[in-house]
Amino acid sequence: TLQYSSVTDPSNLIVKNVVFKQYSGTYGVINSDVYKSQINIYNCTFEDNHAQIGGAHYIANNKTVLNIFDRTFTNNNAQEFGGAIASEYDVDVTIKRSKFINDKSSNDIGGAIYVINSKSFICEDSQFINCAAAFGGAIASLSSNVTLINVTAKNNKAKYNGGAFYSMYGYITLKNSLFNNNSAINGGAIFVDGAEIFNIYSNKFTKNVAENTAGGVYCLLSEIFYDTLFD
Image (cartoon, rainbow, N blue to C red; front, side, top):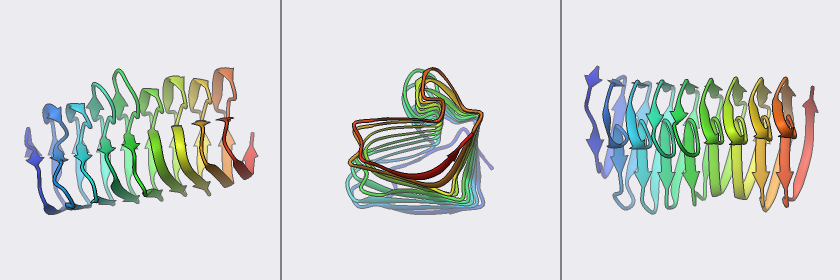
């Protein structure tokens, strides 16, 4: 267990079986703006960490690869964007078999995850529970290519739009996922604006709530293809 500790600007990093907790700083526990770095994190826990941007991770540089497998993020917080993870400037992100619980962006976007200008953001077999933000209670993406497969999003909340997922621009694929009891003003579960293509297949939406428009999915100015169950 590492308490109050951080890792800054690694060029190549492999982390396994470590607990990071109670860190506080400007950027997340693991933060890097090194060009073409590769960061691989396996079977770790990030708990009760706080930052201005990216409570657990802040990754920002071209051609960086961030791989996250079998991880748990609990009670991480960012004052701005990305309660657990913030990624900027052409970072390829892959997340598999991970849990995000009670992660929050206090004043901005992406309660658990914020990603912008990514050519590849992939999240599979993962859970987002009780996360919150102003936009995108669990995940927020801007101008990115996003694939979510077998994701469970429950009890997430956005102050404004996209209770679980908020996206503007890019290509979006959502498959075999469950959205339950998420809430927002618009797009109780999902808010998508200006996507080049929005593919939404074999998903289930139950008990999601919008105060204004679209309890399940709010889709604006996007090319949409869907085969999904709404309840």
